[in-house]
Image (tube, rainbow, N blue to C red; front, side, top):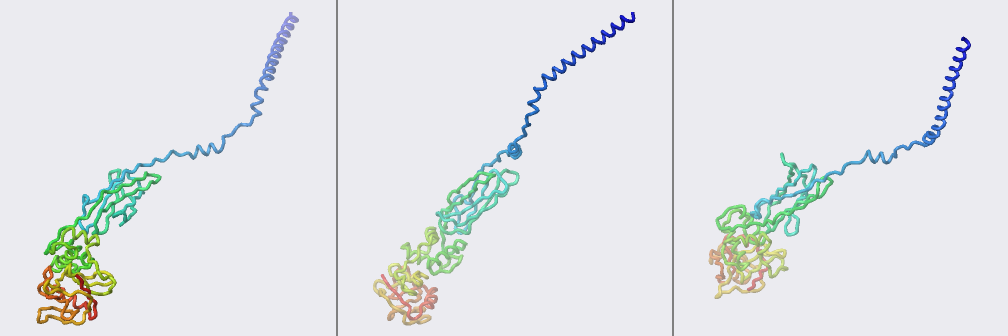
Length: 354
């Protein structure tokens, strides 16, 4: 009995061992089959990320937005500006972008009179920017225009706008009037060679200068200053044209225009209303020189006389009509006579022509 149990135990142990051996062999076979599959992977070197690709990814930026630019200009005066005033313009740009600049120009007939480059300022509680410019006091005829230019930047687009033309208004002036316009007018008269005080009051002296201007330009012989006269003077016109510009310092008496002119440096310096000889007693013509002078009044009522041929003289007189009415002399108004007398030394050339 004991022997049979021993055999049974031995057989059982042997079966278990055999079973374990089979399992072990299968496991070894599996290891033998699967090992080669993992071998190539272990032999391949891992691929690392390309450095340039990583850098490009890290530095890439979104495209920057460029704002549009709408420009607006507003010029004061609705296209008209009173003579002697400043042209003023205000502008807007939309939208407002900090740090932007606008170039502003005021021009006349293709010539730039003023140019500024200004930084745009914000308009509170809006998306607008503002800028402005003004001219000096303007006298010459227009048209004037204002130009605003915003040059394109990385933050905002470019734009250009030009204002409508602006013209100068010249008033009609009358004797007895006082104003800044009269002062501008008398200054222009003096620049064009007419003898006048530079005053803001339109007195008799200004009237005589206007009369001389009208004679020179073959207008009605009055003392009224029209807008047309004002504009012509402002445009550097209306002056007397010398017949003998190369004669140095001299006097010209133009009988047809009934004016007397003191000239120097090839231009008329002082032009006076005058009255020459009447048809029955005409003034002689030719080239003469001052040879004698008498101050004050003489027995004939001649005032501060400068003689240039026998009894012919340039002198002041109480009556100086707009036409030729003297006995042969050249009459000028009493208030102008002393000024002329003091500036005609002995030897001054005098040219008298029809």
